[in-house]
Image 1 (tube, one colour):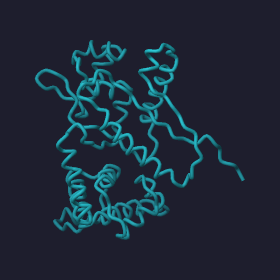
Image 2: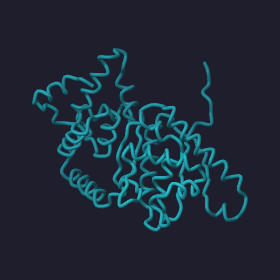
Image 3: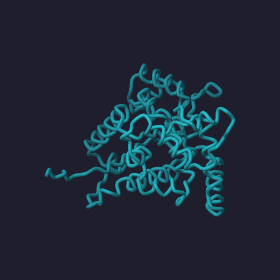
Length: 282
């Protein structure tokens, strides 16, 4: 994105001292390409409400470190720009909040297994088959064997599928070979998208099918090894963005709490939150 701000930075004039300047610049760049592009659409693309975005742009609400990482991924900042964006986000936080955020970041850095790296979903099509992410987590189990034949048998896939998946995961830097053993790189991957992607939809379809297959198993052992529940409720649809953010935070906390060094199985947790009612036509 060749914006005025980026050109000034190339000339050695780093004028962006507040995160809202970066965000405003990105909005202007999109507006220049599409005159009907609105602040509401921009807020949607950033995964937040228009009200929250307006508060941030007007300097009435500081950006959190978590929000900054997410925005940097969605706006596809370069690694150097992302670092500067995060640094200026920290510098503009109130003192107490800045201390809290730094402590949180330090805690995550101490336990590298919980460091989350955001990726561009344009690359997700390379690993959209369900077993790619399963292989990554399989490397953290106690009886793990990096031989592709063992991996294939453990996941119920073919050896060629396992070999190809391993190659793709290494290409993306998610899997690495240490002392002759394939291991997951010490981070959790987060694939952020502002809109619907074919590859992401395909992945979720596959996982839903696997959940349906689990429901066909009626023996007690299978029942005790799964938890498939659901809740129906009346919702204010204007709070959908807030609800999605709450679910994302729950998923992260669930991962932190139940990821174990003594893991012996790989599990998948799906959360579906969708409308049961249909809109009425005028």
